[in-house]
Length: 235
View 1: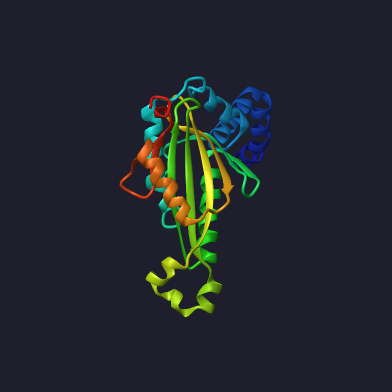
View 2: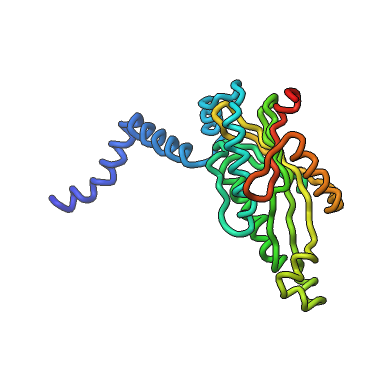
C-alpha cells in the first residue's frame, strides 16, 4: 500500500501542476517581478524616471549643494570611494574623453572605480584637484574644471629624486578636464559630461583664476574657486 502511494506521487504532482496553471503562472510572475526589481532593466529605470521632477529647475541651494559635494569629493577619486548620494539612480554619464556612455548608478560607480584603479596601478603618485566650480542658474548646471596630477613609473625609474615628495610636486605631469553636471528639481544630478581641456600655462591660469575671484567669486576653503554665473548680470 505504501509502495503504491510513493510511486503515484510523481503522477499526482504532474496532475496538480497541470490542473493549476494559474498557480504556476502566478509563481513565474512573482519571480520575474523580483528579478526586474533588482536588475537594471529598462522598464524599471523608466518607472524611476517618472518619479523625479524632470520639468522643474533646481533651486540655487540645490546647485550650491552639488558644487560643495564636488569640491569635497573630487580629491577623493584616487584615494577612497567617492560620494554618489547626490546622483540619481538613472544618471547618464557621457565620457567624451573615452567615447563611452553609462546609464545607472552602479555602472557609473563601476566606471569611475575602474578609472581610479587604472590610475593607481599605472602611476605611483596621482591625485585629482578641482580648479574651478561655476554655478549656472539659467540652465541648472554645475560646471567643474578639474586637473589630474600624476607621475609615471618611468619617471621614477629614470629620476630617483622622484621618490622625494617636495621634488615630485614640482615635476608632476597634469591632465586637464571639464565636466558639466545637470541638476533636476530634486537637487540630484541626472546627467554628467566629461570633456578634455587643453592644458594651460600654470602662470596664466593662476592670473585668470585670481581675476575671476576678484570680480565675481569667492573661494571655497579648499582648492576650487566658486563662481555663481547668476551674479554676472547683476553687476
